[in-house]
Length: 172
Image 1: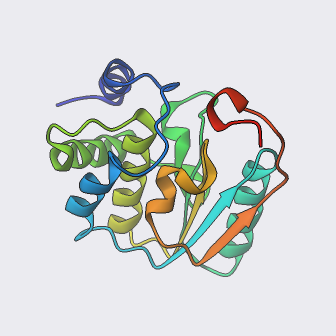
Image 2: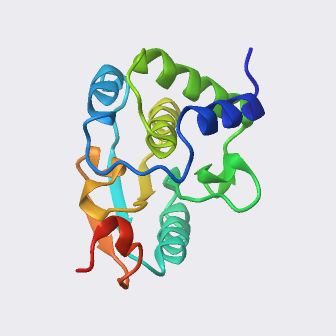
């Protein structure tokens, strides 16, 4: 059985975290294979340059105060790999994350997906299996072409935007 540390090393060797692919060409067929088990209730997608993490945390606390089960997917992690996926403000267990990564890998077969896409799909599996009421998903790099936008969201939030990552996203 793989450990979370094994998975982290494997993901980094498959496609480094800084490798970016905009669009859905890789993630779409894998998502379609998982779609039978991925059924979000309500989804909030948060995009922008600054303030995404604060908004994710604030909206999650408000939702939890209304007795909703909240799943948060953010990036990057600061200290621990499992920080990226949280339920009601707590990191998911390593066992739960390993199980979700295994399921994504099984659905992936030989399709190449990025580090971020792998974790995005793992968060979807976890939130579905844990019957999460509200999914709060932080967009990574690329806005509308980011992997989290494979889902139809209930609400989309854009925080402040700056011109960064121009070498990847262009100058406008």
